[in-house]
Length: 465
Image 1: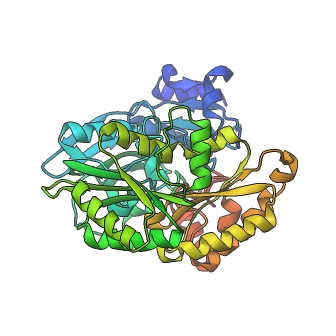
Image 2 (image 1 turned 180 degrees about the horizontal axis):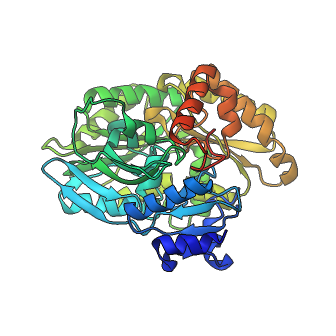
Image 3 (image 1 turned 135 degrees about the vertical axis):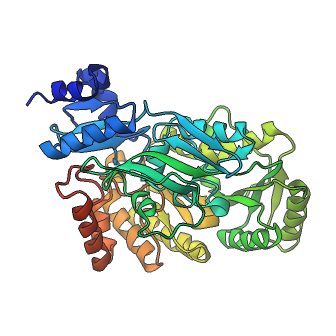
């Protein structure tokens, strides 16, 4: 079978890449954990072309690996088999409609998150999904992984931010649910099923996304706190008193701040007293209530109660950007600092302090060459529970700790009723973890759904299940 020629006959030679240099960027994941092979990379320009390609591959039993911006952390968009194709959706990058009256827009899967945010702002609206990779990650990938980010506390994950989808199923048929309906109980929730399925049940080609009132004012603070328990208490106070204005509450340990200040040239010391823990807090208002005044009052009261040791509220856009850079540069700083063992976990918010304490003991026990860098979305219970190698320790010994530490951390997460994959998905990296931790009845149901929608197993083979 001359697969590239047949694909070229379907949708045009300019949409099919086969030269090794051309396809190489599509065969390696963002973290360089996986390197795959593929017969071709296909670049469709329309849903019709996606449907043609998928139907052809289904008939020929050829694997199809959907790929967006390729910014994922678990190898979910990296092909496994040389006989498969990568279906890269970057050319499908139109904002089809912006419906300000219905607070909605329809974007194709290849639109970057930043492009969607900009289209919303141009209509005096907000699309609130916030990720550090906004300029390169694509909406299709955000949907396929049910992306989270720093604004989940107020707005929810991608599943909550989506009215409906357009998607191509394994047989090439197209489902279209792109109406901005807040209420629609006509049958099964296919949109909810496809979001988070990582391209294993269908190829998302477009989405109707929810927009919100554009904030007129924000208040951003960098806050020194004595402990995660204080963060939890402060979270309760802010949620109770802020009248829905609380958008972000990010937990950053002193170890992470030190790495950022050491390795990120543009990072600025916030100038607060030394503390073991810090928070990035942001309130936003689309009304008339001043969030700066409100946050000032709330932090002052928290200081009187011993929950806040020191705080600085941004007085300019530049200072706000400085505060955000401290938080968003943590992953980059960790890369500069050397080896890192990563865990993307979540536990019920009220359990965070106890989980961090117990997890720190596990790090000391299972990875003595490392130190804990536990940071992230404390407002929704999602921590990036990472461990960096201590300077001067043996790299081979440190790396050998990964598997036993992962098992110990994930077992602890399970004891707390949490999740070993909070926002990055399963992909290739966590297939065995899903088999270990998913309740048997749920896992069996997932297999039946996969068999029903993709009986030949062509969609993103080897991922999730």
